[in-house]
Length: 306
Ligand code: SF4
Image (cartoon, rainbow, N blue to C red; front, side, top):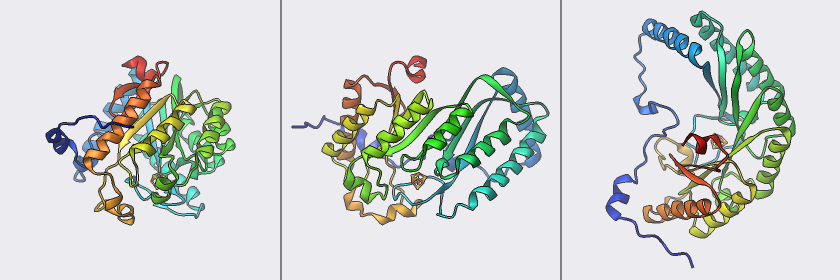
């Protein structure tokens, strides 16, 4: 029988807060709109020149479309089944890239590209190829470049993977979140273990050398038993890295989160036990707790860097 670990209730109360995601820095609430464009342009050119000379630049491209809404989602996304938006969106990115190029004043050395979303694999392989070609045209691709993408296990095809590998991508992150059928149903993200397994194997066969899984604890209907089952299934697929992060319930900001009943969410005391159970199982299977919700196998750069 699973025993709960003792937790200091005061600490739990203090830190059980829906805080902004750290995936952008500064975090979104600290962004400012009243910027002086000219000052920004000067700053951009300065920073670009500095970074370009030292280590090359990193580019993040946000591809915001998804075919269906996962109800827990707090990302900046647009739900549509209309794939004609792909072309128009890429044209807008190309236009924006040209604006940056004008301000750069020298040939960019591209060290990293990350495609995030939304669902980047909403875009066809042909369109993703076009996007990367736009970015690398008349640029220098750094010899140690790292290109990575976020993939949805349900729509990442072999064609996507082969195309991306041929463009230099070697890292993929799949949004797994949870493998329990009831949890998947309530969050409106039904992707059985077999789909995740297939997508993982396909990525490795295509030539991806690093596979990450995103997992969430604190979702509606999750229990210690369901987390245990999810983590045990994940361990079978041996992703190199795992981001096991806390669900932030902010229904005033993410309307989709109003679609499930708050009484189905684990309470603070239960939620921390879900995390501790996951951490215990991952640690026992050779994953190291890197910090900031991340776990990695010892051969992975995150662990080596730590
Ligand atoms: S979780 Fe990902 S796939 Fe689901 S709606 Fe949000 S951005 Fe789209």
